[in-house]
Image 1: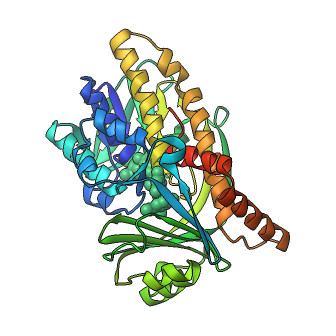
Image 2: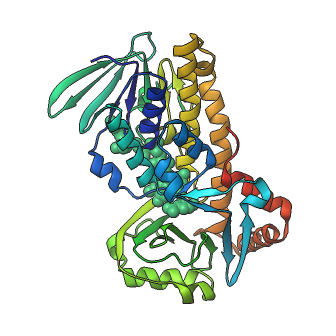
Image 3: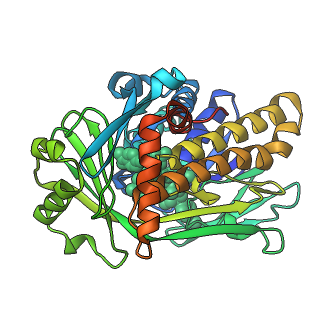
Length: 389
Ligand code: RFL
Ligand code: PHB
């Protein structure tokens, strides 16, 4: 089989890239390790920047997002019994949109299917060959049958545990990592959200987040130990712990119910440089990870897709390599800013095992400064709604 762009990974990065390329008549094949149902069963991001919304529009996939996405003009931040609001639209003129990654992915799969886009599921043993030549190809297997895909370019959109990043030789690749000493236990429940905006809570018992998908679907998280397992937490224990971590007036309003999903995610900051090697381009979680505090993961994947799509477009439409040559540098410049924001917001909101009394005072001082200072709120708002591409 032959295509112009071979895309490894059928998550949001890979699908969005495929759909955008299709809108310009550029052919691609997506190789996905799992099934479509498995990919759609993963509950992840919930907050979209306008940049991602615009890309979904450009890809012709934004109809349901516009109909069902909920615009949020600000967010709530609590510490102890105190709570304040950071107003996004006042500071930036831009809201964020609450619409689940699952729905983004579903819309993209639908569009790909409608367009007759080629997606191979259940692929195994993907190997990238000759990425540093003018004629790369992939080998892989489906149901034990060996296959080959020749292409002009390879887009590595296969997430943190994929094979693409590993294809860049170690003497070229540099990795930067910070692993946090806790995780997030998340549940999804068919209950109305406790507040119409998100609440990020710093509490002496650890961080909590009240989020949502729609008016009858809530997503809540609590900071947990890395040794915890989802099955260690009954729904009752989860709700009790959440109530202790959010301000009492919010806890009183919280509607609880059975969880329909429960999972634990470890927190990590990670960046690999460069994001290009020859004709291989890394995109999204394949190249970088942020802790979910600040909702930057999917949105940063989207800005990578934007730079790569435009680079490929310039290559095919204008025979120019300028965009592709600048890809790694441009993408990384924005990635590092998202890394900084996610690291800052995580550091501000969590309890750390080795935190001293002094460190705790610093968190409170910074929260009080943020509460009172318009410039600090402006900086947070600009980062939260997304820095320009
Ligand atoms: P994905 O979604 O991991 O997709 C990669 C795909 O590649 C497939 N794959 C392979 N296919 C073929 N061959 C191989 N060898 C392969 N290896 C892997 C995988 O099966 C998968 O389908 O990466 P992508 O597309 O770059 O998308 C990134 C986002 O998923 C991620 O950044 C966000 O979910 C992060 N994130 C959030 N981001 C936000 O912007 N806002 C949020 O509110 C937000 N909340 C979150 C999050 C991530 C979380 N977890 C669980 C890590 C909340 C949580 C709890
Ligand atoms: C979510 O709704 O899953 C979510 C929202 C905001 C975050 C992280 C996750 O910062």
